[in-house]
Length: 208
Image 1 (spheres, one colour):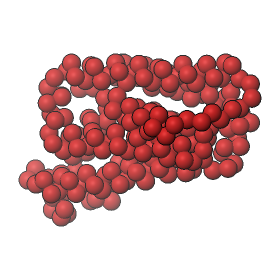
Image 2: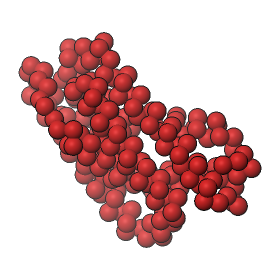
Image 3: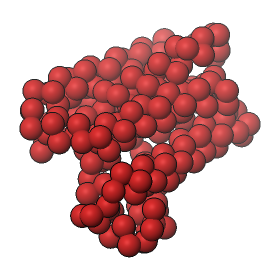
Image 4: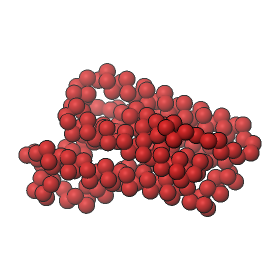
């Protein structure tokens, strides 16, 4: 990909992408919560699922399917309700844990389940495909060919990986994990409320 194929400098594109991806949201909440509760490996596994989900939307947008979805509002509505329902499920799960309280227990969780948690979280996010479609439209020149599109995709998914895996490493650090152990109910209540807020935000957001 040459600079002439981009409407903006690549470092500026990546900076904006990293800031957007790293801002508080369902993905970062899931990674940070899992990392604090279950440790670094679990957090990295959830992050891997989120990265794969993001890559799926990136490929979808690069192939032009995002335009088809934008012209078929019912597809977005299906994704919207699935995403809101899944986030509300996570909210209720966290709030129930906060309500019960008690001793902090770390039950074994299969890596497959953690990966699917991250994957489903991102695949049911209706704004993800819009984000990928928007970044292609903003960053790529009108005459950009497939090589430029896929080169930009590779750069963006690498930046996403840096953000999401970085969250897992950061929030699984020993001091943060100890803080979670000391204030588990508070953390769980906060995560539950934030997931519920994200669910309601998806339901009320205008996607087009």
